Image (cartoon, rainbow, N blue to C red; front, side, top):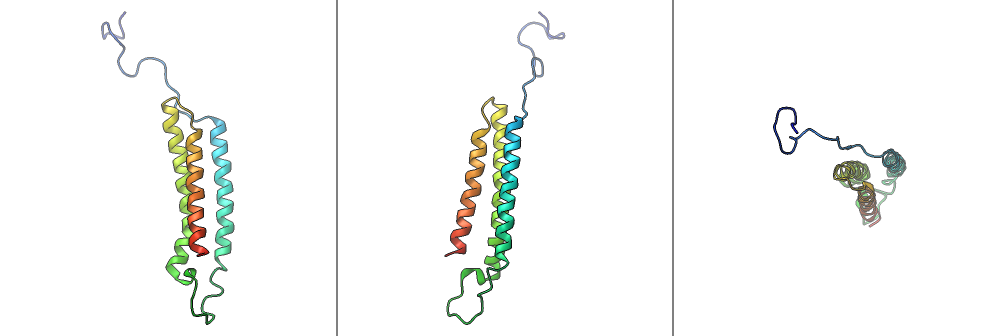
Length: 128
C-alpha cells in the first residue's frame, strides 16, 4: 500500500488519526472555579494587609516584621504569585498529561498544593 507516493512502510509523521490534546471540560471548569476561589481568598488577604501595619511605630521596642515596607510588599504579592504559579502548573501539567494520554487531575492537585504551600509560608512570615 502506498502512502501518498512514499512507497511501502510506515506512514510519515502527520498521517493517521489526530490525537486530542484538549483538556476535558470538567478539568477546565474545576480549574477556573478554584482559580476564582483563590482570587477571592487573595483579595480578602490583600484587604487585611491594608491594616497589618496599624500597630507599627506605636512605641513598642520590637516592631513586627510586617512593619518593614519591603517585607509588607512581598507578603502582599506572594499569594498572588502563588495563585499564578498554581494555575500555570495545573494548566501546563494537565496539557502535558493529556498529550501523553494520562489523566490531568494530578496536575490540578499539584497546583493546589503549591498554592496552599505559598499561603502557609506567607502566614508563617506574617504571624512570626
